Length: 307
Length: 288
Picture (cartoon, each protein chain N blue to C red):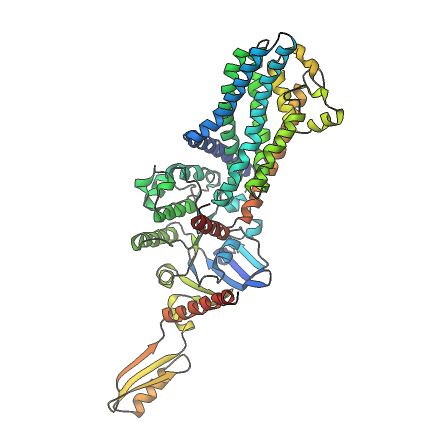
């Protein structure tokens, strides 16, 4: 093993990333990293800077400042060999509509073949891939005849045809029905469990982030406001806990300032012997996130009202 | 990554591009509108040839007719190579085809090779429509094995030197109005490049200007292939500058192949994923 095993496991490293359009800071110092095989969800309301972040990491957009390393290489200077190890699924493709599903995957796969290594055979076997994304029945269909969800699954297949070591998904399940969504989640698990790929996906759906991500990064107004597992996030983002109880036939409520209501509850039980129906409530992660989304949406509407 | 593997990867992209060109040609030729656009203009040229031939007097008249056939052939090559690609580039940018090529290792090279193959094959169709009746109508042509070999070579080199240039020009055009500048410029250059009348009747400075562009050399190549040796008298240099022709067209080809991927990558950078989403919204709202 090389002496740098520890650092080699880091596939994605972003430090103090900044992006400025005119007077507006879209990204105001974003810092995070990901290890090999990790699934990260970049969660945030519309306009939080998710797409900008992912486009900088894909090498499609120049950044204003900060350090970025994807598979050890700065995306702004990534060559074709680097490109071959990256998978990209953007929000809205409409390309190659006169091509057939299988035809396009075979064509795109050919570019990756020279980049195959002993550990990573490239490209993915096309028929197997079509099967994995559930498009076997449509393999010879023209792309323009696919439904929205099918087209999206093709985009995912194209994004991973080169067996990437890191995959960027921008809102991958937008327009998916619940069934397709579950299939997609299975695919993500397959990519991380068998292919050991690192995955960074953007989403504005907390439920989805909780289901598939090892770590959730909440992006708000160009800053990471929380970084951790769903449980850690629930603790970090939700501060106030409420203690409800019944005493002497009356309902009582206490809003515990500070993160841990245990001391208050212990005191309450010691000093008050007829306490029944005790209950500790915390704002759920969902409630906290929805509050954040609402604030972002009202902030976006303001300039339109003035105009 | 060693140099050999990088070269292998580029070669794989060229091969993939050849398959892309074949697939896109098939798609192109399944649309009736496209077939008409490939066949109609050359059919008109043939009609003009027929009418002129019927009125021509022996001597100078016959020479004019003989000059027209290589003229129409050169014009078709140049239009097919320069104007053909400019139209599709904007659409390829807006629907994400270029960004897809950028997301693929050596994808732009594959895209470009695909364009060269597709326009070479569709232009070949147009040329067939002219050549087959043309050699039967026009008298005094030299039709030997050398003719066909040279003609084929000039055609292929002509396409390889013009399509990347057409793609590069198309990537610079922001609107369809600007894209109209390409055929206009082509027409002007055709006029001064000795395509339809001997270039030696033009002022020397205009002759020198025309010689800087590939159009003149494609025209010269086609004439050298099918016109009898005595008609070389109407040319600037004598004998036919076959070697010079291949050198100049080769330089243009190298320039285009080098320049076009850079311009395309730059153009795709302007078209990021979020811009793509905005375009889709516009198309969905307005229908164009």
